[in-house]
Image 1 (cartoon, rainbow, N blue to C red):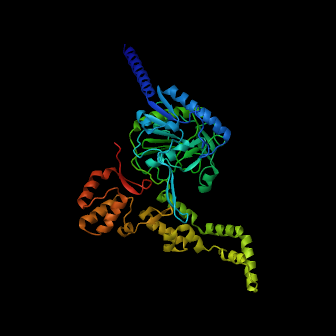
Image 2: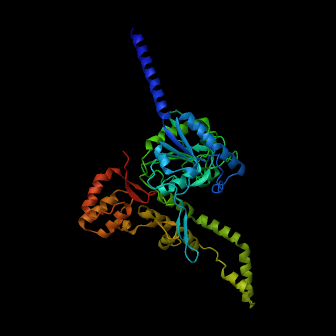
Image 3: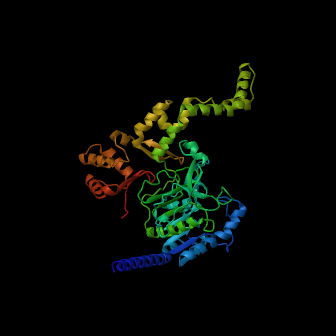
Length: 499
């Protein structure tokens, strides 16, 4: 009798589990999906293939097959699927669905701006915008379109390299997109470690475990490349998730990742090119992203080339060595061997009293000196560092470490980014990325000490502009547990608004 009761309970549990799974599957099928890609029934746009390139035959085939492949795949898994050509897309369409999938660039809402002064120097530059800054719809970007579409939103899914092959590495298999609704155990295969990775880090193994995401890639065919985003600074805010890297430019690049309501599926393959495992993970991704509909971004990366301190400084230290200078000098002499010999001959003729032609004199005047360590250092470490340490390489290393906690990124008038030492921080002897900087500055204002410096620091590294110590104290007390520092988001202390 006891055994019979146990059997009945097990049957009941199993039945309930099956019903639960079935209900969940039905619920997932009700997710409303919008796919934005080129409709092959419409003429190809005039610039098709010019922006991102590719073999003409492959581009033609993709134009005919991507839309049908995505449409068939999505309609197999979901009951409410809308497909629209990017030339017909309107942003309000995304507000009517749960998840939008962008496979191509839409029509810009603001065109690229380039302005030059009378000397032809670029004085103003702004890239095209495709979505308004208040766009918060759950979105999946396929490959190449992520940087352009997300730029005006402050997306961290930026353009690191349009060089993604078909294999993934460093998988975070505990992430929901590998586990629900479909349980996917990626088939890992040992592949040779990319040579460029070994060039930067010789300690890496000669082979690495990788997961094949798509059957075709630029490595085994003329298939189009995918897109990866910068890994540096990607995880410095609570609204991001790194899911995997890939065989591409660098080992820390992001191939699958989320920033707020935006998801990067960096691989280029349409469902007919994806492996069966990847198709299951892609389905999971659509289901997963529904919950972020309306979430928006907390830390906005409004400048995709902003310098992230630690990886940049460590890289500079690895490159500024006496050995690298000597190699540069040898290469320089070899490259300029003929012009050096010609200059020596002209100097000899001039010393002997021979009159040189105007062109010969011009050639001599433009001849560069053989590089010295001083010239090389000035060109490679930047004006601020060179003024501090000159040609002393060891002193340069010391200067970096003494000032590591005081650096911030500035945008120069010629559209470059440089790290600079914040003299206010250095005077206060406090790091801009430790919460003590807020405590110390608010404390100084409360005591009426160094108020100018304290206010400058608080306004530079927060989004606030309070006038009194009381207001600053109230703000810090209320938000202390939610504050985080982001360099990708502009070297700011921001508030984590996630539940």
